[in-house]
Image (cartoon, rainbow, N blue to C red; front, side):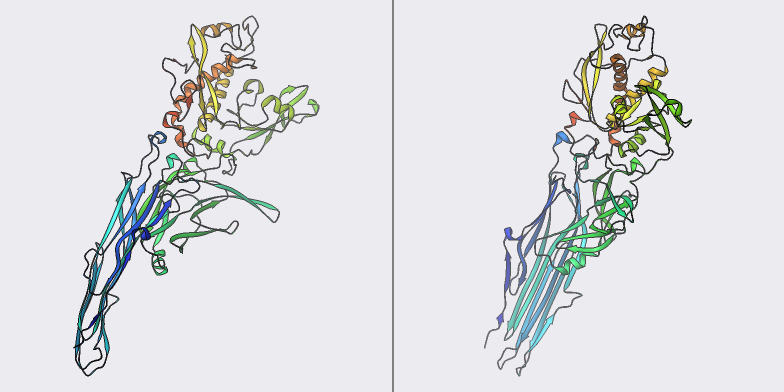
Length: 597
């Protein structure tokens, strides 16, 4: 009697060879808050006589590198979990061949099976091979029963900084035969799909997952065409403990989509179902320049109309029509661009230096002053192009109702600064609002002097450094106070007997408000100014109004503003005082926040 042959094979996967790792970081930021890897321990396949319990275990490790606590704003919320798509495929079959060359009949049995938490499959045969010798095969492999490929949405808590998802496979493969051959086989493997392209656990409050519109232009038939475009490079990453095959990617690619929790205007049609390597992604084509790219794209003739159109929203990964995971992003506009929607309801005028004889000027020109014997003329124009920061900041802090642009002139530039200038409250009278303008330095970081009364006199005791929309607020309020002083006849041209230091403030008024009537710059803060005390009054009032505008930083979506990038430590935000280097003044300083009645 010839004993039958049994086939046994197993593939052992060394741990270090089975690990696939992936670092997901925001585009250009390299924060690397989130990383994930998969490791396989055991056998991917068991076959033959072996009866193996838990013959494979796959562990997916999710790691969340939390931002440093000193830069994390109080308003920020850290993610507590990550959701993903878990997919699994496996097969079980049984096969027998016989009888072997002999004068005896033969028999064989074989079975193979596997089970996991979401799918299982099994196969078995028992075959008798009669004589005379005529070999044939018997098998049990039904694609509907012996093969499985499924996917489900899962979640892992990562609030501690790391979360593991472990998937165990239990299986059995066995044979028994006489004068025949048989094979029992069980095979299974798994992987996950996570949101990528952006950091799925990103924290925009500390500079992660931030995206800025780009202003573009091209010439066509002699005409310059301009448009704005935003690209959010979303993808889905397949992570496994084995080499991913095209058949799996083909199966997965049609099932994924991406959306925004709060829509943006002018979205491009997305083309789904693309993959490369282990990444699945949507594609788009910009009709303005035929540019093709990966991700979600938005493009229009102008930037979005409202400031609230920018800011935080969530990217949602969708699998088979169901939401998988949401990742926070922030959208910004280019600060110094000017592709915001036109605002024709704002009248504009251009101020320029007249070179003609004053008598030759037309009635459409308005003379507002004389410099070196030449007229300063205001000429009405239809519209003035303003920078993006001015357009959106005035929506958030709407205190500027009129603006003008200074023409390029050496003399004008020397007198008024040579910058684009925005006048307040629609007042073109040079003698009443010569100071009431805001230049395009309105967004620069600047130091504002702070004061208190010491021994009956106003003294400068500190400075506060502001940026972004707070800088804009300070300029608007400072120039608004100039208008209040002028319109209420506090600042005016007085008789020298009533205004000894000729700073435009009455002696009695200065004494009543702890200023020195004999010194035009009581605090020695404004060298070169004709009236440092007037500037002091404006800065005192500005500081009081700035404190009330503290939370306006939450609406600053300029890419040079207070929301963009990695913030300073929380105790140095949103401004700092020079004496402490922190966002609070030194103890004991009773800083003035108002001086006017």
